[in-house]
Image 1 (cartoon, rainbow, N blue to C red):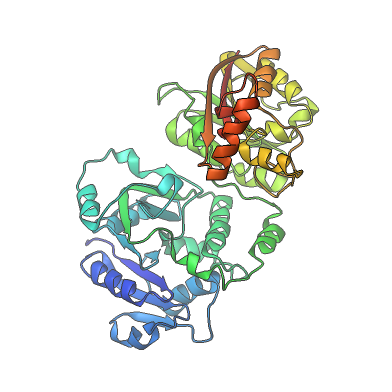
Image 2 (image 1 turned 120 degrees about the vertical axis):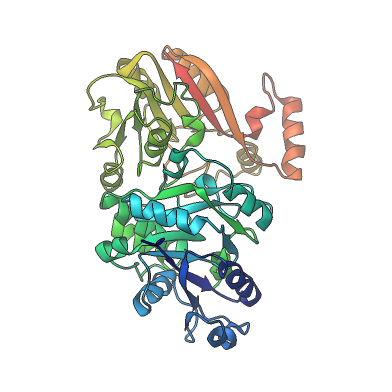
Length: 447
C-alpha cells in the first residue's frame, strides 16, 4: 500500500506573485495529490491566470466572501483526498510536513492538525529564517511524543483537516467571515465531539511575510462575527490561549501524578497545557460560565460553580490551584485565597496572574483626569478589585502564604511613557520602576 496523499486548498486575495511562488514550491512535494486555488475576488490579475495554473480553481467574481463560504466552496466543489491542507499562499510547507500532518490525522482522532511556523504565534511559533532553514529542520531527529501537542489555539494560516471530521461535523459556519472566527467555531465543535486539535511539532512551514492574508480583509469584512459567536455559544470571550507562564511555575518531573485545579478555567486551554506537559496529571476546573464549562469538560473534569459561595466542589487536595486573571474579578479575593488553604496539599501552591493597576498607561489616564473602562485589558469593565505590587504581596502574606516566586510581564513603553516614568520615580517613595512597567504580575505562593 502506497503513502496516503493530501489535497491542498490555497485561499488567496491579491497575491498573484506569491501564489505563483507557492505553487512552484509545492509541486515538488510528492504527498500532494491535487491542488485547489480559491481566489476571493482578487483584482491584481490573479483571475486571468487561474486557467493556466494546472489545478482546480474557484473565483468569486461577486466580490470578497467570508471564509466560511470560501472554505466550504473548496470542499463542496472538488474531489479531495482523506486529508485537506488549507493554506494561504505566503505559507510554504516543509517537504515532509504534509506526510507528517496526514499521519497525525490518520492515527489520532483529533480532526485538525497544524505545523509550527515563523508566521504563527503562541503554540505554533518557531523561528525559521529561510526555506533552506525549513528543509534543515525537517531532517533533525525528534522525540515521537513531540508530534502530539494538543492545543485550542491552532491558527488559520496553514492547517490540515480530515475528511472524516467534516463528514461527521458538517461544513464551516457561513455566518462567520474572518478565518480566525470560522476556525474558532469549528474547533469548539471538534471539542464538543471529543476531539482535540493537534500542533504537530515535527511538521514545519515557512512564512514569506509576517501575519496572514486575513490582514488584507480587515477593511472589507465589516461583519458581525462577534455577535454571531455570542449568539451561538453564549459567551462574550473565547480564551483559547493557555497561561503558559503560570504552568512554567510547576516544578515536578514530567511523569509526576500531580493534581491541578484551575478556578475560572474558561474553555480549558490552560488545563490542556498542563496535560500536555504532565501526562499523568489529574486536571480539574471550576467555571462560573456554564457554556464555557461544557466545552472545558471535554478536556478535564470541570464543574460549573462560583468559588465565592465558599465551596470547591472536588474531593481531595491539590498540588496547584491556578487563578489566571481571575482574582481581580472577585468580590472577596482575600477570602478565596484563604479558602484555598483547605484544599492545597501540604506543599501545595497557588499560581496566579494579576493585572497591575499601577502600570504607566493607567497613570497617564489619571494624570489627564480619566479612568476609562474597556472591554479587555487593565481597565476591563468586569474588574471588581484592583491590585498593585504591594497589594498583591499583602494579600498572600496576610492569608498565610509564602511568596516563593514573583515574575512580571511588560510591554515596550512609548517615549512619552518613559519620560513620565522617570518623573514619577523622582517623586515616588518606596517604588521601583517595575511597578510602573509591569502589565501583569505572575505569582507562585506556597503554604
